[in-house]
Every structure is written in C-alpha cells, then in structure tokens.
Image (cartoon, helix red, strand yellow):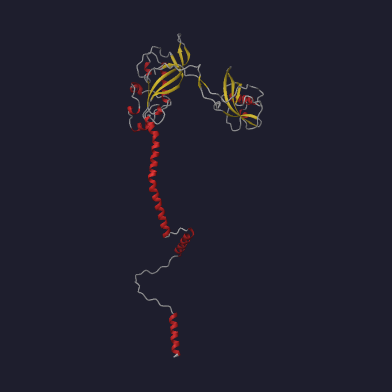
Length: 428
C-alpha cells in the first residue's frame, strides 16, 4: 500500500515538473522559412532608439496630436490676419502711386533739363551773329521763319558763347539768355573787340524731360506720342523740314529708342539783345581782416615758400606739406616768381599769439593773395588753405575746394549798383 502511494506521488511530481509539449501543427510546404536578422539592422535599430531617447523627438501619438493642434492654430491666425494684411498692402500701394499720379498730371515724373535748350540757344546765337545778307539760310536749322538781313555777312563774330540763364516760360518752352564776346568790323573794316553782349532766345522743345521737353519716356516707348496728350501743340517751326534737321546741341544727344523719340528744338524768334544779369555780392567769409605779410610770421613763411614751389617749381614742395597730402608742382611752371601780398585767417582779431606756433595738431584756415609774375606781367591769385602744426612748425594740410563761408552768412545778394536785366524785351 505504501509502495503504491510512493509511486503515485513520484509520478505526480514528475508530471508537475515536466514542461508541456507544444502541439504539433501542420505547416504549408510553401511557407517561407524564418530568416535571421542581420547584425547591422539590429545595430541601426538600437541606434535609432538611442537617438530618440537622447533627443526626445519620439513620434508618439500624443506629440503628433499636439503638432496638429499647433498647425491648426497657425492656419487660423493666417485666416484672421489675411484681411488686415490685404488692407495694409492696398494702403501702401496707394501711397506709392500718389507721387506718380501727381507727376503724370504735371506731364512727367522728372524735372526737365535745361541742358538741351541751352546748347541749342548757344549754337543759334553764334550762327545769328555770323549771318548777313545772302546767308539767311544759315538760320533755318534754328529759326524757320523767313528773314531778310541787311548787314554784311561776317561783319560780326562771336566767341566764348555760354548760357548764363535758362528758365521755363511754359511746359516745353524755354527762355535762354546767352552771353557772347563780340568782335565786329569798324568803318575801316577792321575787326575790334566789342566786349560781352547778352541775347535772349525763346526755344520750344519736343522731347523727353532729359531733352527739356514733356514727353513721358514710358509712353513714348509704347507707341507714337500724341502731341495733344504729351506736348504743347507744335508750332510751324517744329513741323518744318528745317526744324526736323535742327542741330543737336552738345550734351543733349538724341535719346535711345526705348527712352522716347529724338528731341526737336526750334527758336520762336530772332535773338533779343538784353542787359547783363544783375551783379551780386557774395556772403560773408569765415576769415577775419587781412593780417598783412610779415617775414617773421611762421604762417606767412610756410605759405609763401609753399606757393613759390607750387607755381614756379623752385624749392622742395613736400617740405611744406603734411604727411598724406598728395600734391605736385604745376608742370610746366606757369610763373617765374611769386610774392605773397595778403593773409586772412579764421583766428580772432585780438589774437596776440598769431606769430607763435601752437601745440601739434592745431588747425588754421587761411585765405591768401599772391602776385605771380610771368613775361614781365604780375597776376593776382587767391588760395584757400588749411594749415596744421607738427614738430613745432606750420604745414599745408589741404587745398580747400573753396574759401570757407561764415556760418551766419545769408548767401549772395543783388548789387544795387550793378546792371539789371532788360525786362522790356518780349520778342522771345
């Protein structure tokens, strides 16, 4: 009995310890056999897991949902801000178009240039002064009306022809005053200098603002411009063959095709002789009264020696200039000798230390007068210079581009004693 019980217990323990055997299943003969995973793939997967763990960028469902919400919020912000941005864009476009509209109402977006009309007037005055009986056709390229001249051709000639004033009388219509030095024959037939004369000319222009006209270059590039829309009505001078062949003045060459048509210039009358423009007095300068010339003054000594080397080539120029100033003597030397005649500076009039050299780095602005001699003749010159001190002496630091003006100056004013323009001339 005990033996049977022991066998039963032993059998029970054996049954409890033995693991259950898996059930046999039938597999298809066509099933793919399991393959071993490569070591590189395992390493890559482990690396990805490590990267995600270290950076925190794990694409979990919760985080993807947060990203979706963020995108949704951004989209709604853009939807709400869209009308505001559109309104802002319209406002900016309107403000930027306002000046353009104003410019078009005035005929052009840029200010007309006086260069073309001025050059044309200079050529016209020179041709007019040289013309005479039998050579009236020389004026046709400038003035298309028939004229009859009574003077002998070549009895006058012009030199130094230059424009001294030019202003618009109307859009595309200029009043130009030209100065010319006249030589004319006397009763004996000899040419004599008659001095400077002034002539006023009316010049009508058809062209772009660069040529002095009013044609819009952008409209001209699209097609032929209508005279009624872009320019004043053409005068007979403009439509004549002579006007079509009018000379182009220097500095006003025909614009390229994409910038508009070639400019046309036509005088509206013969030149009118007028008075010289009003003389004017310059504003106050930043220099005091003339301190005179003293050989013991260090400023006078430096300036005198510097100008002598600069104008005559005598002496070492670099000895009197500050380091960094690039200057060379005039070649060939225009003068034989120089003499300093006056010195004005920007120091107070009661400066008692004018003859002493101050500490290094001190600047002084001077306006000096010098008499330069050549061929037995003395010629006065003026130079505005900036001086600076270095090593106990004055040196020229720079040639000033112009004499310094006083901060309180009011600009040029008309000289009441000078001539005034002839306001009675209305022929132009």
